[in-house]
Length: 496
Image 1 (cartoon, rainbow, N blue to C red):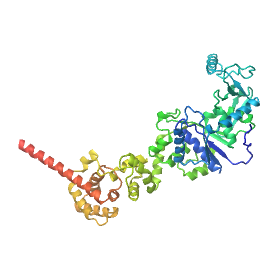
Image 2: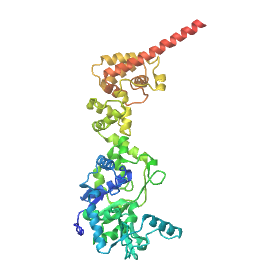
Image 3: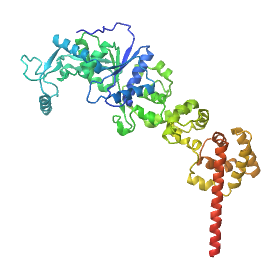
Image 4: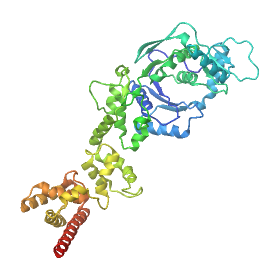
């Protein structure tokens, strides 16, 4: 059976693919591989193909496939073709194996797994390469009662050269490449065969993937040529290391893309950060999606491993938070308000009001999760006082100021930041105090904190009713403490 694909012609448009294995969630490394393929396709006005490599039936799940698609959709990595699934193409792979057998480019291997393992251990004990010894390569009389696997007949002399678009020229000695299994004894094809068949049939021109696949490349090149096809161009991306310069893993914290969504990161910030993991364009740090597409090239991908820095990602997300319109942040933060227990899932919330509240806080929050926590004093019915702030600012000295402000706010015609500022100025002048002498007690009274956005904006967003209620609560608290202290003083005098 001959493939329906045809050899690529000069000048053919770029076609790349992202081919995740659904044995886990979409992680940082896979997302960066997807992004670089996507950027390469978009920059070259090519085609980005999504292919699910789900031949590992013991570990692949529908849940992981959905999570991968969800992660890519959240990041905005839209695909032009697919998702193709390898489990739906089994007949195609087996037909290709039959062709190789007919042409003498593959052979049946009857060695049992335990025999192969024993020979592997023996070779290692003698200091020899742990590769298949080829004993079935020229077998004339197969043993009875054994279901064979199929091995590809690899050249045993010479060299295989990979002209990698990132790493440059990489040379492999063919004698180090053993005859790999391309069809298991249970009839399922293996990775190195199916990836070649798929890339040929899907017309893939460039294979951009992690450098953990580099050792597979010479094997795949020989399979391409056995079918009479010119291999695609290869580009192997350097690996991503954790801050301790070991391979990035769960011990370094969140590595799944959707975990960053759930932590309140913006997709465009994570995308920007992933692009800078191994790729650079001068000293520029922040890129729009359009700039990434315009400027991306494999020539600017480094050869050295990239180091994942959670602090840098958090900083970058903060920059994106500052520059995102408050209306969009309001929509994005709503699910986090539900998660924080501040609103019910079906509760109506005035999104115009929420946008104004968000606008006062977005420069203070690095994530949507932080923003939701900061919004608590706007949304909650009441606030908890910071203990040090309460002791320092909700005092007998502040009492007449809070009383006068409450009366002034109650009668204010326009409850706007500018009108509230005018009221503050008149009270400051009347009492002969500085702005902070009034602003800090009010801030603690209405937010529970000693730090907040500008107090005039905070009061406007809170609204007259909630502001007056919180001021009254602070006034009552000071009066209660005065009464308790007075009672204690009288009791002490009587006892003396």
